[in-house]
Length: 177
Image (cartoon, rainbow, N blue to C red):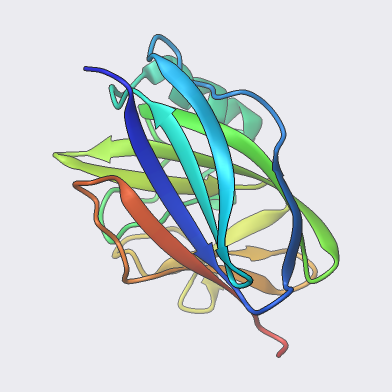
């Protein structure tokens, strides 16, 4: 294959997200990679760019799953397809990120996998769990999101997804606002 540019954007209220950084290297197995970056399109949007090959690797998925206690309850696929309630068996890559959301620190993993000819994005955190229609559960139809255990912060998928070109976006909201 070859190194490709992969973008994931995150939209939020003005000033809601601060101190966002990539806290480790790209975990990519045998895939070639050429760095990751975060850019700000506006005061309400971040774009994560990962330059990496898109060949699914079981070793990358194993590392991801181990980091999240091998539990699908701590991860979600941000695509309407590509997550059937299980942990991924292959991922192209993932990066560890940290950020303050509404003044609280969050450690997250952002990864990309494959589902057929599409590329699906994954987000995971040990401090969050998957919710489906208001209940803890798994994503069967793509109607799910991650929610923080104590703050109620939700990481919602957006309809602005271009799986073939490996771009996706999400929105941050808070249940208590």
